[in-house]
Image (tube, rainbow, N blue to C red):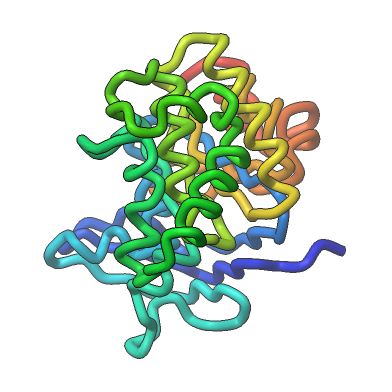
Length: 252
């Protein structure tokens, strides 16, 4: 059996009085890809942002139930949220490079985490760009602005930036939704490569993408987890009719 990286038990999340997630229970396995699917507004991004407590920045939010990473409660009062966000990297729907050079985009997290040695920074930047399958395209123009890169390259740069601080988990919120098919295919190939080293949770609207790249799939609707299983089972023999209706495009 696969090792559990993150254990979610009866997890709920509230924005003020609005109950955005209701008693979610599932396991996120080490070195596997969990795909999260469901119609807009069903709680997918809220769930994703709970894993690194990005929702903390919104006033009036609170969580209930349990979310454990390597057995430690993510929402415990003594959790070091800065350290949590180093361990749990995030890549957003729209690539968001900083107005800096390609090199400085990747080095940014290293520097704010206190890494000083120039040689070590140079090494880690190159390694991260290699892992993000971008090194070959940018190695001769590291001092160029990140904004000179194409959309797909910018998204891979943001992945490199997330990888530079050596996370254990990578969260991706529709990372390919703004990209063309060629750039999307590159991101998907990259995810398959990255799961050898990282645990990945990806929110996607694209059913074919979820079927292609995820090992497990969670189907959310109206803040509830309708179904969670191995991806092959969800897409070939779902346990619930509403899951089948959603993945075959009859609603959503």
